[in-house]
Each structure stands twice: as structure tokens, then as C-alpha cells.
Amino acid sequence: APGAQQFIPPQADTLDELRVAATDCRGCELHRDATQTVFGRGDASARVVFVGEQPGDMEDQKGLPFVGPAGRLLRKAVDDAGLDPKHIYLTNAVKHFRFELRGKRRIHQTPDRVHITACRPWLVAEFAQLNPEVIVVLGATAAKALLGPTFRVTRQRGELLPWPAAAQHPEDFQRVPVDSAGATTDAPSAQLLATIHPSAVLRADNQDVAYDGLVADLTVVARALA
Ligand code: URA
Ligand code: SF4
Image 1 (cartoon, rainbow, N blue to C red):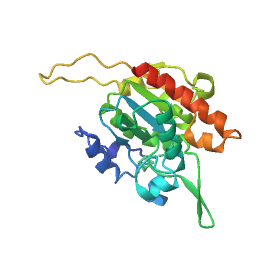
Image 2 (image 1 turned 180 degrees about the horizontal axis):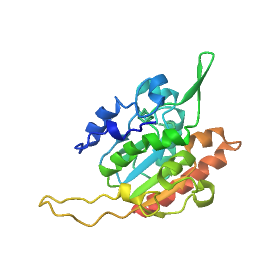
Image 3 (image 1 turned 180 degrees about the vertical axis):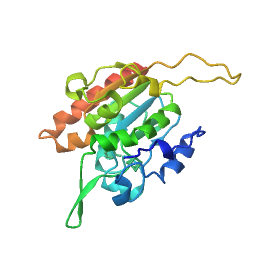
């Protein structure tokens, strides 16, 4: 698979430019059956960036991330944890919906490693335009994209970890901010926290317990910002 890199304008210096360019991405096969690219959205100066898996059925139709049931749950959890929902940025590890048709229903399929790898340049490009204090990794797919295949969300969830040192290819994410005089300043030191994906909360046997766990992890994020 060719991957997304060739579709990313090398001179892009805003999220909007990236979002427009991403509409034409054919970096892997997922663009063929999905309706549209679903790029990240939110505040470019967000203190907290959330990385999910991939758009779901509703996101694919609307062209916006986290607008379906998982998104509703996530927004409630953000609120219950005391985070300001206006100052977050939401994106996904993979930007097209992967599904299997069963009759007329489109059933979510977890992206494979090839899709995660192909789409990863968009995530790196987004992070080059963002400067969060905390990155929230929602579930195993986002963890694979950012932290590599050996990271276990279940073992390390709810823990603040150094970013980008925790990332699989930290050099990809190293951003050297340039001030108005053109001088480089110190690279930012963000933190990262992995937690359960909101869709996994919806699928859990005990949804209340799973939801409280998500809120508890996001409360750690809220405290780190205070
Ligand atoms: N699940 C995700 O991971 N991302 C979305 O945008 C919606 C559901
Ligand atoms: Fe491009 Fe990512 Fe969509 Fe694949 S999933 S076509 S790499 S935007």
C-alpha cells in the first residue's frame, strides 16, 4: 500500500489545509467503500487531543469524528471529568470507515496494521499543527498508531506518560516551534494517557463500571491541566 504520505502537501501549515488535502487521500483501500474522509476537528490550540480508532457509520455519513453513539458517550465523560469540551481536539488513527456489509447493514471492522500504518502520516501531520498538554489515546488501535504494537492499554491505562518519548517513532512527532522572530524554541513536553475506547464502554457487560473507569482516567487528565 502506498500510504498517505504522498497526499500530504509538504508546505501545509494549518489543519484546514490538511483537512482539504485529506479528502483526496487514496493511501489505502479504505477510501473505496467509505463515503468520505473523516478528519480531526476541534480547537487547534486545544490543551487536550483525543485519538480514537476510526470513524463509525454515523461519522462516515456526516464527515465528522465522534458524532455517533461513541462520541455522545465520550462528550458526556469529558464533561463528567471536568474537562472543557470547547477546548479539545478529536481525531482518529484511521480516517476512513472500515466495515463489512451484512445485508444492508454496515458492520464496523477493526482496522488492520496496514491501514494504521498507511494513515499514520495524517496523524503525524495533525500533531505538527497542534500543541496539546495531554494526548488521550482511546483504545488499542490508537495505541498501536502512537505507541507501537507492544503497548497494552489494559496494563497502562490511566497513567500519565511522557510524550513524545512514549511514541513509537518520537522523531516523527517532534515539533520545533518557531517564534515570530524565526528562532526555534524548546520543543513542548506533552503527556499522554491511554484509556478505554468509548465504543468498548458501550459494549461492556457492565456499562456503568466501564463508564466510571473512563471518567476516572479523564479526571487524571483534568487534574494534570489544573
Ligand atoms: N469511534 C472512533 O474511534 N472514532 C469516531 O470518530 C467514532 C467512533
Ligand atoms: Fe488515506 Fe487513511 Fe483513508 Fe487510507 S484510511 S485512504 S490512508 S485517509
